[in-house]
Length: 279
Image (cartoon, rainbow, N blue to C red; front, top):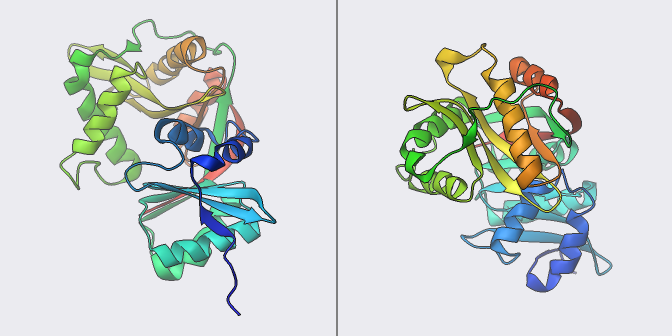
């Protein structure tokens, strides 16, 4: 006898159930919530939202786009999502989410999807919701549209250093540049720029009513160790809390000792942990 799968593709009619599920962890789910606010649940560009339904109730979901992100997924939901993912084939460039869920999911899809290029097994999730503990750099500000050509090379350098491959290897960088331009035009790219050189930069990549997520934190290699990162992050936190969202979050590799020390000095505290599988 055929068994009906508990996984189905969600649509706009599921909006209320999806919102309720995402709101159970507004910090942990900031990326998925932000994406769905931008694209809608039906998605654009091939992204989907898979729902795990038990007895007519949505109990977990999985955002499936360039990033695959399980939400509120226990063992049964992970097993169902893994079955569905193997059937669909890999379309993502990374799997990111809570350690237990991603570790379990990855074990189940490895025979079909492996090997991974890099596995980041432990990435602490950090949060700050009050004034930073160090003075802000007064020269960190929003990046102007006229400075996009100055910012993009720094963004490419940061991405390549962090991920291990350049973001422009596929389409010559058109999509990546478009994303950077979007962040600049929406006032979510911040930097200290001196004599045409980016000294420090960071972007707010995901935004909801509850929280925002900082990404792309970078200091020019020749200027590291001089305090630009802590003061720069303090400035970004001040901007974000005043004008973007009431909680500022990010996640960092557990082995990145200098970055973790910087965020601790600024006043971030750990509130969770994620795992990333990069292809």
